[in-house]
Amino acid sequence: MSPFAPAPAAMAGSSRAGDLFQLLRDGRPRTRAELAIITGLARSTVAARVDLLLASGLVAAVGEAASSGGRPPSRFAFNPGGRVVLAVDIGATHGVVALTDLACTILDRRRSELDIAAGPRVVLDWAVAQVREVLAANGRPVGDLAGIGIGLPGPVEHTSGRPISPPIMPGWDGFDVAGYVREQLEVPVFVDNDVNISALGEQATEWPEHDNLLFVKASTGIGAGIISSGQLQRGAVGAAGDLGHVRVPHADDVVCRCGNTGCLEAVVGGPAIAAGLRERGVPASTVRDVVELVRAGNPAAIAAVRQAGRDIGTVLATCVNLLNPSIIVIGGGLATAGEHLLAGIREVVYQRSLPLSTAQLRIVASRATDAAGVLGAAMMVIQAVLSADAVERQVSA
Ligand SMILES: [Zn+2]
Image (cartoon, rainbow, N blue to C red; front, side, top):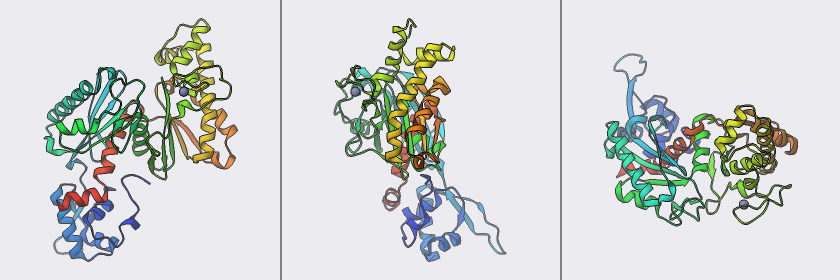
């Protein structure tokens, strides 16, 4: 199910403007009469709801329908430009800020260097300054802002928006990220980890026909975002998808930073692959080094990345049996090494997963690539502020 097009059955019998709006989110212009037929509501009821939506700016008149004579009836459609969303994707060493409309189309996008270890106040003050600057540069007042979505490179308790013991974010543990930003910009603020928002961004913009999608980020760390029946699955406390610390069978001698041995991340994370290459006399220390070696055709690096793919595939084969995704999207820095990582993953997943699970399964590289984070951060806001309940609250306020 596309996030823009909820099932019409959900609207049947409801007369709220927020529910009527869900029908219009597919962007197709409709007349009052058409809306009355689709919903089964009286035309006078539809007309009153359409007026509320027009006043909110979420819906706009768009030209005229063909008429059999007399005054042509006006048609209405979702107005994605009515409000804007600010998306902030914060990494360990850089941050990306994007302005989008309500259809998740990027209107402006900027990337800056930053140091997450400088702590939440420094980084979030930077983010708020960027939000103000991007709004001003695009001629949009703060009042046009529907909300702010923030992705962080560590575990986040989604309900509170607070990072929970994030390993690479000193000073952020338990910090009220959403509250701090809301004090400076009075709009809804949503926070999640970068892998979850990347999964949302990929699914919404590149694979909307796939309701069951598994997004894997393979970079310095390894993580997954799970979309099941069209919904992002965060688990009980937001820790779902932590693939990095699943045990791989052949690596009991490898100690992970989490204290356990044989974790996937300790075996196939970028630094682990680089360390393996150094042991073989090939100088490398980062994900970027590994990717450059693969692109240059270094046989040891190609073999190491393909083996990393097989190790990731071993863990993913279990995920496939458990979750039955129709598509697995591989993103993150290691995925930019070309087909070698994907080939290793496919080799094991198709061999080890049950035939019924793999019959329709696609395993592909990320299409949204480094925009996935901001697209997903924006989508997180859009899903919340354009829900039937949220729109209903907005138009009745
Ligand atoms: Zn571990």
